[in-house]
Amino acid sequence: MTQPPDDLTILALETSCDETAAAVVRGGRKMLANVVASQMDTHQRFGGIVPEIASRQHILSLAPVVEEALRAVPGGWAGVHAVAATYGPGLSGALLTGLNTAKAIAWQRGLPFVGVNHLEAHIYASWLDHDEGPTANDQRRTQTSGRPSSAALRRSSGPPEFPLVALVVSGGHTLLALLRAHGDYTLLGQTRDDAVGEAFDKVARILGLGYPGGPAIQRAAQGVTPAGTLPRAWLRESYDFSFSGIKTAVLHKVQERQELASRMPKAPAPEHKVPRGRAAGPQPAAAGAQPAPLDPVFVGQMAHAFQESVVDVLTAKAVDAAARHGASAILLAGGVAANTRLREELARRAPIPVHCPPLDLCTDNAAMVAAAAYYRFAAGVQSGWEIDVNPTLRLGA
Ligand code: KG4
Ligand code: ZN
Image (cartoon, rainbow, N blue to C red; front, side, top):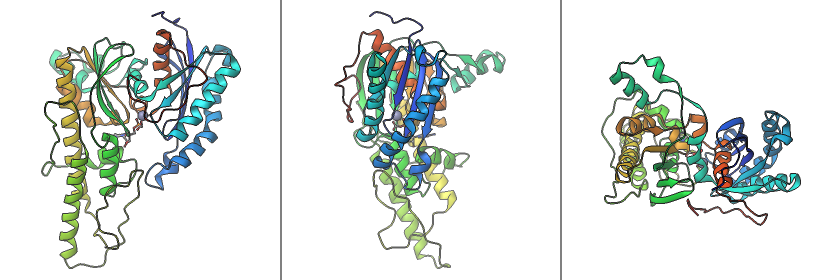
């Protein structure tokens, strides 16, 4: 592997889903610019992502985000040495906009180009230089060592050291992978049905909490006094996951609750709206029926029980995989890594360091794409102009 120069500066684009992002990263770690134009508001009224709208919005946003990112580069375009873009997995139309823009920029400016796997990019968010806020690991160390808390609460993280176990948890993917070196991935397990972020989004819809579901569930679960638990799909002897059963368990509890409420005599209730989402899941009431509105205490308890169940399984499997493979650290990656309970619980249970990028680097961004691209260039990889989008690209492909 020829190490690219420390000052290799990469412009990267990310358009795999509903964020239009451009970033410029130097040496694989130093973010000069990290611009994200979120389409959240546009999709929120539909209760989920509408792929055609996402593509159209990327086309409108790409030029402004690239221009904004470039303004932060000393020397402007002259300071950019290479270009990268996500080519999969993701929505094909959305991927096309970023990939084609990046290829056009690279071709026109005579710069090397590399396509990046979105899942790999999420993992590489842990290589970006950033000041980490407090983690449960930090807090625990502070308590046991008696050091003043301020000493441990802000520190700059060093690069993770191999071998590593990565837990990638996003809206489209849930997987555990072993990394022995840069680019050397072994898939240990993955979801057999819904991705965990998808489960958060579907359960939020069932509970009438809106989109995106992850942050809404986290908010609803905060400070709730637990009342019962939900089942966990352990799939013993395997690092695979399953989240569709727990989603159905929540749906059944909601239906029972609504049936009970409908038998109680009371004043007419306002119409209960269930937002539609990107993957149409089961609805809490039969079409035409007038379901009773859910009581917020019940919603909080369901959100809490769901979050605890999911966090328990994800954490247990990641910690077990890390021990079995002698990992020196666990990397937590993907949009669901923004979940506070997951971050806390993983750091509390893992006997080794847990690298969690800051929240804005957990959700989709282009800085992570640039970081992954740096190590692709380091391995001598470059993409030809014939590279096309791959909506179902897998890790390690
Ligand atoms: O990685 P990401 O930004 O996009 C994909 O590649 O899918 O992940 C988006 C997912 C959504 O399902 C969203 O509900 C979830 O991440 N998410 C969360 C939280 N913040 C975002 N899930 C749980 N807790 C959160 N705080
Ligand atoms: Zn993502």
